[in-house]
Amino acid sequence: MATGAFKGLKAAIGAGKDLQDMTGQLANWGKAFSDFTNIEEREKNPPFWKKTFKGSDEETAIEIFANKKKMEQMREEIKDHISWNYGPSAWKEVLAIEARMRKQRKDELYRKQEQVDAIINFAIGAVIFLISGGILFVTFYLIGQWQGRW
Figure (cartoon, rainbow, N blue to C red):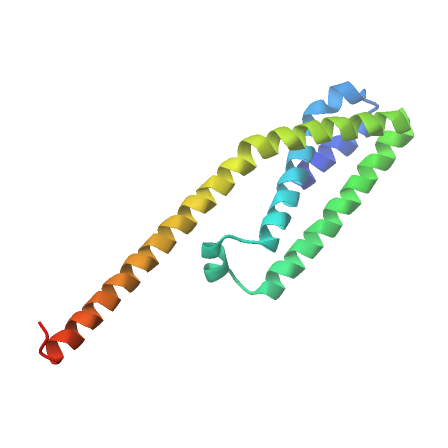
């Protein structure tokens, strides 16, 4: 998603479009960048159920590193293009828009995902607790029957 938005931005800048005309492409790239940053942060402290079922840590780390470097390169190129064509103040405007979008996206989407993760963690914990409690109960019951106490 980020690559497509990035190519659209480069084409718009190359065609000499005004910064205000590129808000759609800038918004798409900003969303992709924000999503990647959120995923990167979540991978540092994944939910319980993802720790159990995810692939190798090395594979995940290499994938995050490669994508991070690609995103940084795209961001730097966008900054250079915007600063070159519209001046440094335009890049500051882009950063302000990006910060506002990131906060809004965090408030809406990421909080919902955190709630889903918390519900899944609770459900898995409850199932494990119930199964463990059942096994413990059956074990004590069978030991009591074997000893003749019930």
